[in-house]
Length: 180
Ligand SMILES: CC(C)(COP(=O)(O)OP(=O)(O)OC[C@H]1O[C@@H](n2cnc3c(N)ncnc32)[C@H](O)[C@@H]1OP(=O)(O)O)[C@@H](O)C(=O)NCCC(=O)NCCS
Image (tube, rainbow, N blue to C red; front, side, top):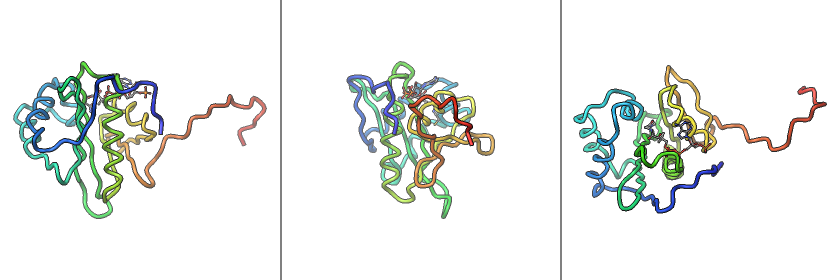
């Protein structure tokens, strides 16, 4: 798995969240602007919607990872159980405060959420996002996922049989190779 060149910012720690973090989690989500809420929830999320979402999080059945900087919650990955039978999976929603982006926080949260999700049945973790969301696409690919277009949305999947990014080729191509 690619560890990337960015290291999660010094002083940033991650941990699994529980009901005692619900209020901080709510404040983090409410601090997202309209554009980010659209990307995070795939719809235009009002304050009331965000409040109901935060109130409804089941910390026992789902996996909720948080990143803290200076004691302040600056990012959250929430993996919730979704689908039935063969379609059962954890679906992850990910967000990082604008001031803490591009420092490896999103990748770290997603990596830890995926690792925990793959330990529990149904051992499949999915992130859905809008096709134009370059940041989420890059974050998924940085963990070796190969996101696919699926019914108008991008779908990055992790787990046995999930599409994976081809390994990086270090050697330069052989100019005499025919490619056959
Ligand atoms: C998507 C999001 C969580 C990424 O968080 P982040 O902490 O900035 O991501 P990281 O710093 O860990 O970056 C991970 C990779 O993505 C790349 N990346 C991050 N933002 C990028 C951007 N805007 N454009 C292009 N690449 C970007 C980084 O360079 C890194 O790639 P690398 O390993 O090749 O260097 C953040 O942008 C966000 O909260 N967006 C709004 C909510 C959202 O879109 N959620 C996704 C749907 S659930």
